[in-house]
Structures are given as C-alpha cells and as structure tokens.
Amino acid sequence: MYLDKGYHLTYCTNIHPGESWDEVYQNLKTYLPPLKEKLSPDKPFGIGLRLSHLASKELLGNDVLSEFKQWLQDQDLYVFTINGFPYGEFHHHEVKDQVHKPDWTTEARLSYTVRLAKILAELLPREMEGGISTSPLSYKPWLLEEDDSKVKAIYTSCTDNLISLVEALLEIKQKTGKTIHVDIEPEPDGLLENSKEVIKFYNEWLLPVGLKKLQDTRGLTKDQAQEAIFRHLQLCYDVCHFALAFEKQAEALSKLKHAGIRIGKIQLSAALKTKLPEDIETRSEIAETMSTLAESTYLHQVVERSDDGELTQYPDLTFALQHIRKPNAIEWRTHFHVPLFTEEYSGLQSTQEDVAEVLRILQKEPVTQHLEVETYTWEVLPEEIKKDLATSIQRELEWVLKNIKTDQDAENGSSERGRPHQVTHR
Image (tube, rainbow, N blue to C red; front, side):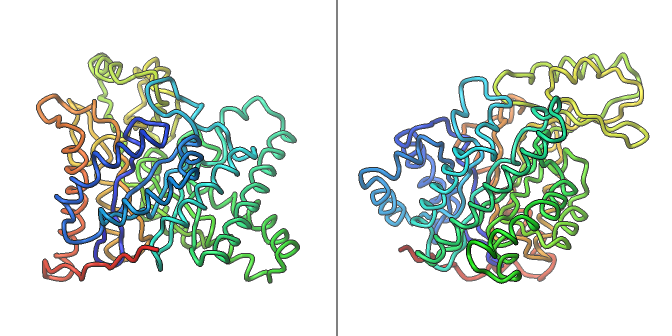
C-alpha cells in the first residue's frame, strides 16, 4: 500500500508455499484482495512477489503474464518488488544452506535474475522504480576449506556476473523506461553479512572491476559507470539480519550512505533474542524451550554476545545449543523471522526495537521507498495469541502502520494522512 512520503508497504509472499506459477497465482488470489479491502480499500495495494525459477519461466509463457497484468489492474494491485533470493523449492523439505544455490558464481543465478527483471519491468507501474532482492553472493562456510586463489576466483566470478546484470538492467531501462535495481541481501553466514563486508565488496570489487568494464563495453564515462552500479546494484536491508550482526541500525545505515550504497528495500523483520542468565543451571529451561524450535527446513544461525562484547557465530541452532552453558555468554540472537507485533515469546524476546528504530529513522530520512514485512515463523507464538495466516499478515502490517503513524503524528502534531498515490498501469 502507498504511505505518506512516498513509501510502499507490503509483505513478502514467500510465506505462502508454492513453486509453480499456478500455486503462486492461487495464493495471490486467496490472500491479496481481502487484505487490500481491509487495509487499503481506496488506494492501490502493492505486492511483494516471490517467484521461483520454475514460476518465473512459466509466467513468461503463453500470455500468462498478460493475464496476470489484467488481474492486477482489475484488483487495483501492483507489483513493485520481487524476492529473487530463493531460486528453487522453499517449503516442505530441507532447505538449509541450499537456499544459496545457485550462487552468483553461476550463469543460472544471472539468467534467473535477468528473467525476474524483465517480468518486473512489464508489471511495474509507470514512474515507479522496481527492486529484486537477491542472495549475498554465496555461502561463506563453503569457502572455509578453499585456498586464497580459489576465494579470489569466487569473488571475481560473482563480480563479473553482477556487472553483466547491470548491463542487462541498463538495456531494460533503455527499452522500457523502467528502472530496476537488484538488491543484495546480507545475512548470517552469507559471503556478505554486515555493513563492513558490503562496503569492502563495493570498494574492492564492484567499483574497480565494474567501472572499467562498463567504460570499455558500454562507452560510459567513469561517472556514468559509477552511477549505473550504484543505481542498479543496491541493498536489501533486512533489519533482522543486521540485528543478528549486533549492528546499531542508525550507524549501519549511516555507514552505507557515506559509502554511496543505496537501500533498494528494507525488509521489516525481527530476530529471536535470548537473554542468558548468570546461573548456568537455569539455562537448561531456555535450552529446552529453544530446542523445540530447531527444525530441519531452514538454517537458524545463532550469534552469541559475551560479557566482553565478543561475538561467536554458530551455523545453526542445533550446534549452538551444545554451548548454552558458556559462562561468559550473556545474549543469543537467532535467525528466526518472528512476528513484529510482540516482543515476548514464552520467556524469550525479539529484536522488535530494532524494527521500531528503523521506522523512526524513516520518518526523518527517506532511506528507501520500498518496505516489506518478512515474517514467516508463526509457530513461535504462544497458542493463546496465534491467528490464522490471513489475520497474522494483517496484524503485522497494522503494527507497522501504527508505528509509522505514531511517529509521524508526534512529528507533525496531526493524524492527517497524505493524498492517495495514483498508480498508473502500463
């Protein structure tokens, strides 16, 4: 939905199972119109679309895309962002580190992302930028056994493919007039997982390699090449992921801005937070609670903070639970995208305040126009406050609206909302 100051708010449809286009389309028809009617009856409502490799290919065949465009127009819905991180199956089987495959060293990842960009250019309303979130290059543990030359080759391949992507996005811009940016999403154990690594990758790889290639192949000036890289390769700033890195949100956003790196999308999500008591024996109760969350589908990395500020990272909750009795460990943050509306989870907490802080920052500075709720760990909620999925999605979006509205009212001294945004379809 369109909010004041040019923001577009939605939720990521990766929470709905379905890898084929028919499954995706059915989910959209089931959940989106009722949600729009409740939250945005008089204004267009945006969709955070997730398309697998399979669904993206099917959508481009046999006039399926034309049919979908007409449905969007009929329902007063629009697509402004796509989740292009999970390439293949994302539900009902073990995903774990396979979510990073194929990574950015491969032609498959490049081709898939270009295909998503072509789809988004067709769906995107005029005079609106579109974004596609993507993986943080690769999975860092895969590189641990590699020598320096192999690691360098991996960075080289990732960089070459991303600059080829920029060239493809420039061509889409030239043909359609639509600006599409691909938003790299740092996350725990990704090859890029925090602001420091992102900035280093831009400064040591993307810019040196990309400037030369775009000048040579496209005939761009140095300034034009740099603008192309910064415009078309942005960041998907997942609040949960930066909280897991124990980064202060305002500082991280400031560092990225100073480096010239733009935020294409902010994913509003919270991590699970666990305060570890000094009494080692009482931690067994916490371990018992958390062991029920150690499921086999997704990776749930744990970042541990000790009393001296040192951070220790575990690749999955199962491994971390073996170390819960470490005497100097005082806090765990675990990679679950838990619901935003509450900070308490049966004795555990969340990084909800980080999300609230980012929303406060947005009231003062337009970091990005694209906001997407990405909550999918509903099972951590106590039974007494669980709701059906449609109500849960609505409750998350209402929490965001309430926090944005509260801060805006405090700033403006008024509850008056801005004029409805007119979404013009192609």
